[in-house]
Image (spheres, rainbow, N blue to C red):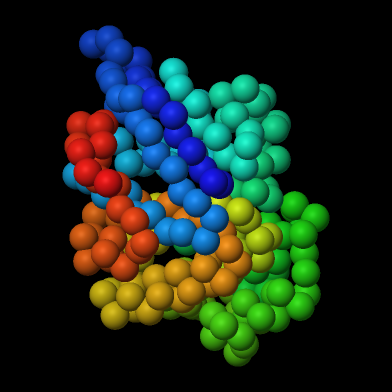
Length: 220
């Protein structure tokens, strides 16, 4: 089991008092499996993803990533996990504008000390980036940028991939192709994938599905 949430609750302080966002959440994702996280806006999906990434810590319960309790780690230790163990894919791509495709692809792997030229070459071929390595993000289409973003994440061989609406800025055909590539590569590496999506159609392409409503799991 790569990711496990046990009785996780989270609230944020507002001018009107505490706002409960997640209530007593239990969830797991195993190695080599993919799980879609669905629900309406405000249901707690992004908060759950942030907790899994160690970008925030729960008020109660445990978030366990590869045996590490996120709530017991300091900021530096959680950042270390994000550099290697946890990979993030965002809707907005978040490529570094001043770096070309080749440098963007290897950026996280170099930070984590996991840069592997052979694996990079495999990713470049599988993602169809061979002719784009010297281009910069502004010279790429949305689909190309997201393929680079996926390659950058997988280059460090993370055990857990967290994706937040990774096809949200793409048209349906391009989004389907990008998701298929990501699912294929994640399965090949044995990583676990937790993906937030508003689309039931996309969610159905993953192994498992958890639906949130009002910060609670209503189906899984």
